[in-house]
Image (cartoon, rainbow, N blue to C red; front, side):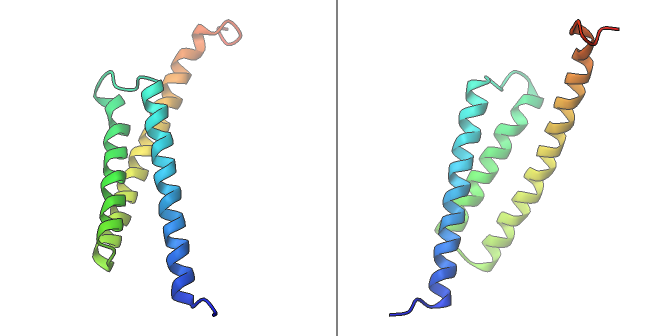
Length: 105
């Protein structure tokens, strides 16, 4: 029996949701190992992880057009939080550069 296109799309969708769940678990593990929770700015990634987890659950429990658009909106917000985190890390590394003897002058 040949697999229909809808079956293949469903399998791909589940595989991508599984990959998202695995990535989420990795992010949680990394944040926990780094003890990334001192101060409000360091809590932003935890809020982002919680939002992605909620979106993932919503899409798994009730997969319809509205929940998928809602999950996409969550992804846009998390992308903004990620860009803010990249900026913060670059800024802090730039400030700490003078502490390294190779870059002190």
